[in-house]
Amino acid sequence: MTHPLFRDDAYLREAEAKVVALTPEGGIVLDQSVFYPTGGGQPGDSGQLSWEGSEMVIATTVKGEDGAIVLVPAEPGALPPVGTAVRQSLDWNRRHRHMRVHTALHLLSVVIPLPVSGGSIGADKGRLDFDMPEAPEDKEALAEALNALIDRDLEVSEDWISDEELQANPGLVKTMSVMPPMGQGRVRLVRIGSGDDQVDLQPCGGTHVARTSEIGRIRLGKVEKKGKQNRRVYLHLDN
Picture 1 (cartoon, helix red, strand yellow):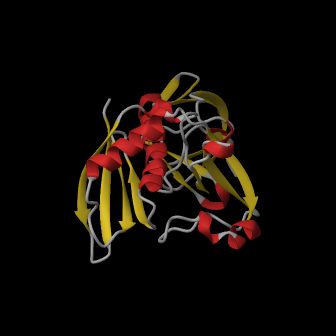
Picture 2: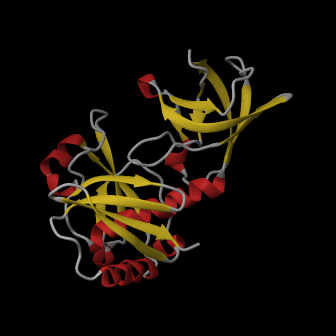
């Protein structure tokens, strides 16, 4: 199992590690990882891996078996042998933009309080699919509400509950198509705001900014019809 350093600190950009396995496909498994693996609509991190006399570009990161996090090289090459001490460095700009978009999508689910049937995160934009038979009447009003939440500079924090507590509170789950990961005994919740200022609380395994003001200005893009009951709503980072 790879220890997820990104879970301890989403702002950690570099870290030492040790190679514990190599996959048949040419991937690298470390004992601890700052690289987030593809999941929950959020892309896997990219960056660089370096060790004595060598370095390698990492194109993406995926989940392996038994809790392993697998770094995928951009090109075939000589891999660091098992036991090698390495230094991992994130493409921080890309990751941070994912964090901004991801937190913005949580807020989008606040201003559009409908069940979510899918979603995707990119470095410049993201989208949520809603159980929404009719398109929103006033998209500009939604954008204003979204940016107003961002401007409140709300704290983004995490909490943990047991699998049983989540099953007893199904209203916490906004996604219709993807259930949060269960079976480990506990589930991570991402909270936006606190106390009387709390605006959102939902299960999520991704990385987020520390405060909503860090997202920056958001604009809403097109709204696409995806089936009889579904609408896909895009949001874009303005910078």
